[in-house]
Image (tube, rainbow over all chains, first blue to last red; front, side, top):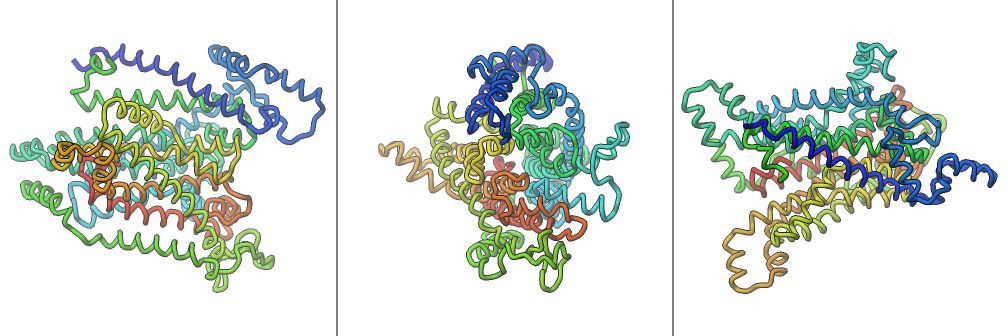
Length: 322
Length: 289
């Protein structure tokens, strides 16, 4: 009966996007109204202009209207897929987000896949060898990984793998062909994976240790099942639930990681767009990105909750949310 | 064999609380943290000025005179790293301290009072935990200004939720214990039970949280300073040094990588101590932070 009610559940969760998007947009609008000198000062960025030019600029970007009107204009634009134009480049915000989205998505993908593919097996492996030197090694590695800021790891990797060993390109996102792009994004992707990998390792190990001492594991062993089957089929499945709980944290960590990794490697993604936007107080771009981040988080959490159902048969979508 | 492993796992969990001496790595971490504190207090007398320039020695690799070489403006990297301990430590200390205070208030209240108090506090906690605090800090500090102080405020606001959740969990474990029941039947006031009796029992967890918060805040603040936010231009800050010396990464790698490694070492040290405290004083179910 696992799948029943899942459609309605997804719809209900997607409807949750509406209040969250509203909340985020209001917060960002209030933030911009707090800028010293207002949005016009951000728009001018220190350049001297005549009063007429200021008035013209205000009219062009709709800044001459009251805040509430500005907000409702932005909101109605949103429903038409229009996020306004950048203060700096006059490019459509939706356009520049669209152009840069895939790069960030690939980085997230590499980071997520690597951190799970390495973190879960290593964490399990360490738990099975509890107290040995290998176990302590994995624990040390996970603390080291989760304590290392991504910009430091990025610089170290850049120096070792791109400069000293010359395995990877130093800079940029490649010439556009898919394989070249992947080649350019592999090293940044690995850097993205380091911190979440430490977290995944640590949680997998802790919850696996917890599982190993449970009665159903002793019983499975008593039945004479192979150790591998006991661990993977009976242990890991339950041990993964706390890992999933932490997956929300993982997504937040990856979001922050992109900003630094794209900055160090000079990649044109959403993270570097955010940095250039905040440096120049490019409010429409910041608003658009805040929106994307909000939607991203809601969708990621929805995916996590759906994954619960795959791992844990007790989850019943007809009961959830009532 | 298999049965022995189970017994081992059970036995060691029982005995874990009685093992008094911390492992070697934890001692090492503690020593490194103490060394950084020492440098923080006496650093000015240990090394030269972080601003002294020697234009004949620009971007030099490590030598006997300059142990980690010089940066792009001919300044000694060691002196700048030592001078940077102040900003590196003060911010994380403040953030961790605010986390400790707020979480011991709200965490114990949520866990002990329960009901609506609990629901409201935990809804807010869940909401805030879903947001990327560092990204918010990046936007707020760069758009509104306010520098280092603003960075500390924003990061503090996003730091307390994890602590509250853990303190609440520890309080829930205390709640059904006989001493609480005894206090209640004696008619002791709720506030007194919470802060005179539960507080000392969750205090070790608070200390562990303090260490873990410190490490997180250290990395986050260094990240902001790496992006050029929250710091005065040119001031000796580890994150900013990393960014500024990125240009001479292939001439004198130490100028850029050494501050980064110090950040990692300090974060690892504090995390080792925090994790050890945490494992010692908490039930295994909660150790997966």
